Length: 101
Image (cartoon, rainbow, N blue to C red; front, side):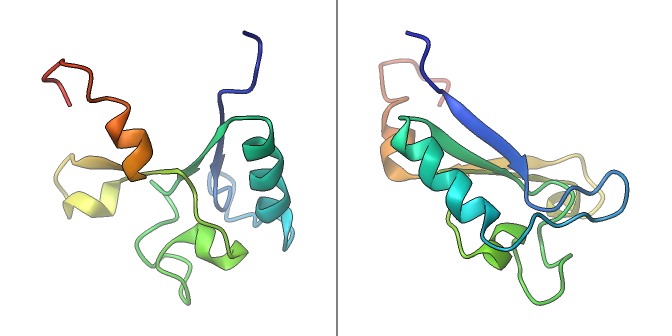
């Protein structure tokens, strides 16, 4: 109905080198998205799995927990694997009789 569906963001923009969002940015953005009824999605394909050094996930540096996390590349250790992890509530919303999920 014209509302916000989701906010997708790479936790550190990595295509042109790792460009980190300002501290507190994701916390404010996530709060605004959730207030508007949307879900937050952290794209950790390039920056996850410890690539930021002190944090296993890039979003941890911003002290946030996304509703959905996408991951790939190092997840498969050279094999073309990827995964999506989400909250119990979002996962349960797919329990509609279809056996795909």
